[in-house]
Image 1 (cartoon, rainbow, N blue to C red):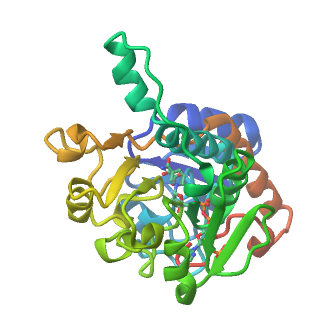
Image 2: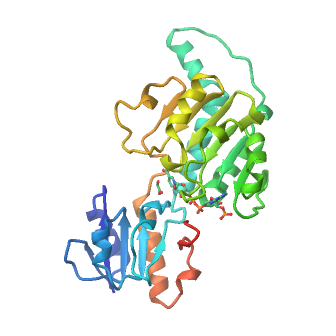
Image 3: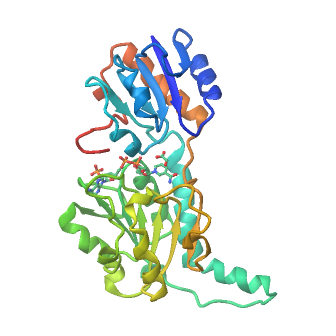
Length: 312
Ligand code: NAP
Ligand code: GLV
């Protein structure tokens, strides 16, 4: 069995050596133009030129959860895309979202300003019942985040395409329930995949529906920059309709140094690191799936196999 590795923006050597240790019988190399075709590939944002060399490819294993960068590629007909299924990401995402939510709810940024000035001042306690959290996407990451947020006694709403039963989470299903979901939520967390249906979902028209249309909504985007219509955000913040935003993902990454988000007082920016790929966990997961396939298990029995028609 031959496995090729093609990782844009990542050092391939530790992946190649880790995969060799996990799959001792396999022939595993970093891809170079003209390399022989492989049975499986381990990739991050590979160019079409890489795919064009892979006529026999069966499994295209992404070292991330989001597969938007792969769905635009022209793949051989038999190739299936397999994404990371958690592999240590969901706990990181739960930490990140709870941190952003609590930082906002408890007004820790304002406390920090006071502390820097040496002032011992309190802010009036706020009721968490007034801060219902809406989580868009209740998949591998969204479900873990929803459960973590519910542990802090916030009311939690979750929006998904198909029904879910998650303790402590009120589920809104499908496009027809979207407006009700937005109206019932004050803090909005985006954990959707990018698909034709979800691109631009964080746009003015929808953000105005948060919190029953009243001012005070807060946005946490940890999914993809393409979900947010970037030009819509700052006017809503400056008008006081939205109270703030924590953004981890952007239309252009790295976020350009002169982008207004960096310096806006109501926006917190992080560099697409809310849930990092953990190499050891990811190699173990991918190697386990390749072993299963080689032992005769079909793709449809594996977690994380992407439905190209659905887009995630
Ligand atoms: P997932 O397991 O595929 O979950 C996706 C969820 O979105 C599912 O609950 C799905 O509903 C829902 N959904 C999809 N289309 C929808 C629509 N049109 N309307 C309503 N709900 C819809 O994905 P995941 O592993 O949780 O990851 C989610 C995304 O997070 C990834 O695609 C990636 O872009 C992003 N991500 C970001 C980072 C980071 O560091 N910032 C790290 C990892 C992942 P159903 O369950 O009903 O199908
Ligand atoms: C990171 O953004 C991922 O999709 O894993």
